Length: 294
Image (cartoon, rainbow, N blue to C red; front, side, top):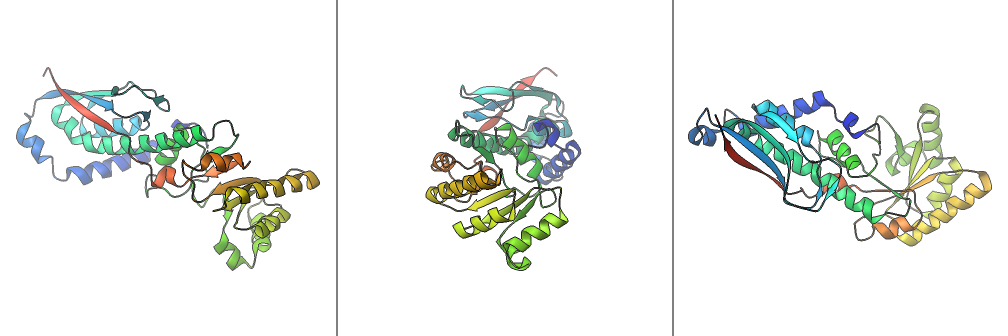
């Protein structure tokens, strides 16, 4: 993970994102609230977690309510902690009733999604507990939400892989095909980016052997069965015994909660899971509004 979870959230980018999402939802105005809710009515909104899991994204929700005109967003829940006892209040915000209603869907959409990412990550982390294997995210993120989703992964106990194409070298089959082979691709990458770790995608025992011979720092073991993963670990360990420390191993592809424990038990160092961000179900949270003194 690159810094603390808080440091991963770009506040300027979050403000811009929330402004766009609010504008998308509100358009010229909330005609239902304008028609039914007195302009001077004030209210208190409780954000309630209704499903066990990990809450993350209260900062984003607070931004949505603030931009709509809400006041005094109070965080009750500690983000990043698994919570079984539900329903439970996780935040409270006061303000004009129309403002709270205007922010409701934007705030909840973001909060439910990010909490879903954190919750699914926590489930995967729990499933590999005791194996020494770390759960990683991928670049399979929602466009425009990458930094927030990766922060949610970290809040759920996972670790972040590269943020984008700019901060880590991962040589995949298409790079190898164009570069003229695996060894040549690694040589070129090492020469061009000597300060970065070099990771190479491997799809067979032959590619694993070749990649180990290049001095690559990490091997991405793509869509391999547990028996193949165990063989890769054995090959890596044999190379380390003969030549000293060599590559770490990352399993990827087809990873689910049903098979991740067996994958981790193979001895790989990392398991990367695209589903953390591209398929996490939203955590169930809702907003309950109570009239307040004007």
